[in-house]
Length: 192
Image 1 (spheres, rainbow, N blue to C red):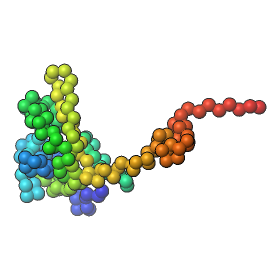
Image 2: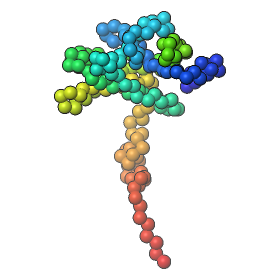
Image 3: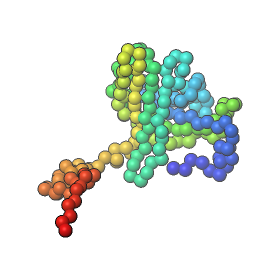
């Protein structure tokens, strides 16, 4: 995945360059354009609403976005922490509608001092949202975890019986114990 061209590299060498993640989400309730910063941002001909609110206590963290390798579709973990009770209830009530919703990921880079876009929106991949998971630690800590996966994510799963495990090997070749010894400690005795 190459996102930058030669002209971009000069722009990226500035001292205060930051990136932000953007998500175009299509839910049954309507489209939402979100970004990982504060307040509204206009870029790419659309207004994107910020989802991080440190004063309201609701923060969004985006996990690492790795470059996909051959035969592997990309996925990104997102955690919404500090969610209040009302927000949790709305997500819980809509959890079935959220699962499988379209969510295309983008990123852009900005000059942190001026807030100006240095490099406009670049599409990472077309994606969809997995089922949200709810995490509760005591009465005070609440978080919602979800994953944005590529629409090609289903190709990551092997066909039935193709698992590289002892059970998968025996399914393909009944009685074969060849994979039983992978990563198993082996002791060899030598006789003189």
